Length: 470
Image (cartoon, rainbow, N blue to C red; front, side, top):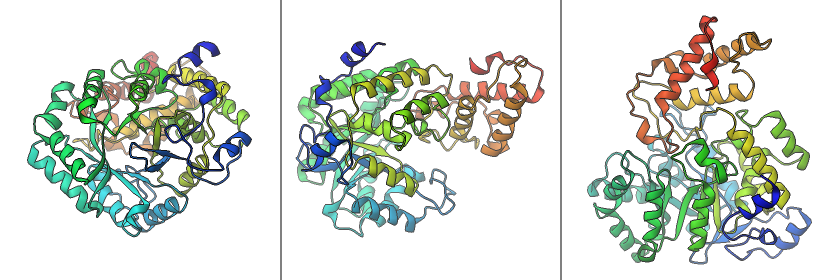
């Protein structure tokens, strides 16, 4: 794609001269414009304004992955959350201008709201904004849904919720009927509108994964519901290529454009595509990393993904699961203030996105919605190992290749290190329990079978491995 064609596709009516991170049209810091012109951070957090004119930090703290005493991210029920370290995270974020905290009743095996409530309640309520969700995935009766909403208030230790979402609409075997079951026919949307009118919900919105018909239907309700914000998956890969990765996905360019045309603020999830755009799992090849480092040697790989999101003026905030303090420091630096991308930088990220989608990776973002597997399989761990091995060149289908022996050993040894034997792909019985929970619409059993076939072929060391990268 040439530069002129790409710039025409930027979406939302954005002109190249308007690529300035403003508060839904207006900057909130006096020194921000001059700092952007000099391309030098001045230490002030970039803010955008919501529909009520309240300032929201352009980077938000995603509470799906939290620090643990063993250094993990609290995605398993055996991971003990480190409350003291979490408190330190919250203190640092608030001190440096981050005021948006996004959680859910189901995050961290149901513990996220409670520990976030403990961390946040130590600060004045006006200093932070909390977002949580109606995550009634398995039991959407009115009674259960009301209980979930009320429990969120108690667990977060608040008497109002700043941003409340219908959680992950668009999924399921019959997406439209499931949307109606979870939120319309049980009267929950009407109840939440009443709660907003009473002030116990300040902003009402929804998060989306899945079928475009549900997204379009929800937006058709805007005239009556008046959505205050919508949360979508957006990054420089999904902008044009989400549908190429999986035909059931919707390109972020369309999702953003529909919201921008209605003047609805946008909250971004998966700005790093499950960490793949931060380079930690090896998804970014050496050539991709070189392209980014040549442009900005001192900047992190993750900063490019956040700058992409922040370049679009209707983005209210981008959520990041900042499990470790160095993630927090880097993300705060990137947004203090955020420097919008130039035309040339946008084109460069487009070329990197093209290269990424050409790789036969599993499009898993490690959201953990498929977990726990009833048979104990570490689904995200298996996919992460395969993707990392692929990027590192350790998935070699040609037995005649000089690199085959080295790649074979690296794949098998690292597989055993990354995923315990009893949690590997060969234990999948294809029950299909995970399928309806995956927001990326991955055929999880089929992918597990593909990886298992490859691993078994390596162990046998004599079988045609041509299907490994199919």
